[in-house]
Length: 176
Image 1 (spheres, rainbow, N blue to C red):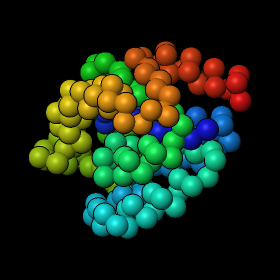
Image 2 (image 1 turned 135 degrees about the vertical axis):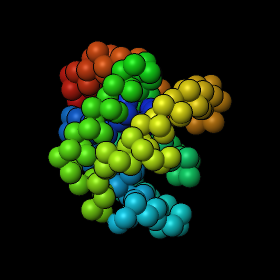
Image 3 (image 1 turned 60 degrees about the vertical axis):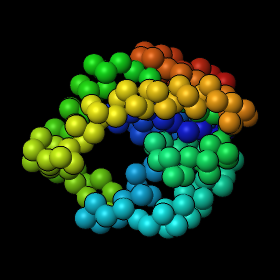
C-alpha cells in the first residue's frame, strides 16, 4: 500500500494524503516538506532526490506532490496513484481559503517558511497565480501520464469531487 496523491495546487493533496496514511497505518511523505529549505530555498536536486528516496522505502506510505524531478522514483515504488481531479471552482476556492488562513494565522509550513498576503496577492510568485495558471497544464499532464502506460503496475484512482474523495477514503478504511 504505497500511494501517490497528485493534483493541482490547492486540490487538498496533503490533507487527503494525511488521512489516507492514517487509515493504512503508513507514513505521510509530503514532498513540499522534503523540497523546501529555510527562506523558501529549494534543496538541491540531489539532496531532494535522496530525501525522497529515504522516505519512500517502506511498505506503507502516502506521498503527495507534483514534483516531476522525482516522479519516476516515487511512481516506480508506488502501487497506486490517487488523482484529485477536482473542478477549477473547488480548487481555487480551497487555495484562496487555505492561503488566507495560513497568512493570517502565520502558520509555519516547512523549514520555518510562511505564506504572506503580500506574496499571495501582489507577487509574480503568488501561490494563487500558480494554482490558476497550472490548473489546465496539470490536468493534461496527468491524463497523458495515465494514458502513456509508462508505469503499468500503478492502479489509478481519478477522483472528481470532494465527495468522491471521501467515498474513496471510506472504501480504503473498510478494506484495511
